[in-house]
Length: 309
Ligand SMILES: [Zn+2]
Image (cartoon, rainbow, N blue to C red; front, side, top):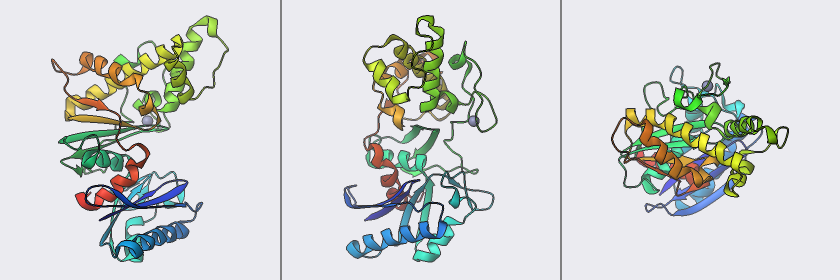
């Protein structure tokens, strides 16, 4: 049995997986707002509930929104800011008397899909999150690749290759650089691209400028020409950005997560564009939607206790 906990901004979820990956226990509790001690207490309560049912676990996997600093071992980059600067792994290990395995949510997503999801037969899986932000995780033979800086897979702040930005205005990123992959491939980035296409088509000037990525995707599915152009632009950018990853890592599978992964129009288009950009006469890398969707984070957290991540 494998116990995993997904520490999110609004809820903390625990699951127990059996050796076949079947969820045999699932429990959610709200995340205490800006209260580190209360957050630890909720995690402890969830572990206790699981243990009442299944007996003691020697280790717990934890998926978090941020990362463990390789400089001092404290949490960093968490949008639940009360975690930042805290020694979460050590504090939980002390509180629970167990080994705690922590990884960020993109790594957990990639691991979940690599162990028993769409990538279960793949040697190298690159899992990417295309949501409010853009993240990624690399799993090699069912182990999360962390890297010496703890940033393996973090392609969201690479620069978008020039093929993806032709004719487009520069986009400043919160990280301080311009034209990061995230500024184009996040949901808000896609919405901005749609607005730019609307403005370029003068007959649509001053119409719906504030649609969400989901609403634009729905328009594209209904055949709206400008939304389709924005999707095509996005697919080209995604392919250009992924080609540099494929040239370096050459993964068997790239699994897409986050809100933009629901856009089924995307997959064939990206595969077609990849042929232009990857340094090879053919591209065998499969681009696929996830098997487990929203459950991937917490499933991957559980599998951390299997894989040593
Ligand atoms: Zn950036």
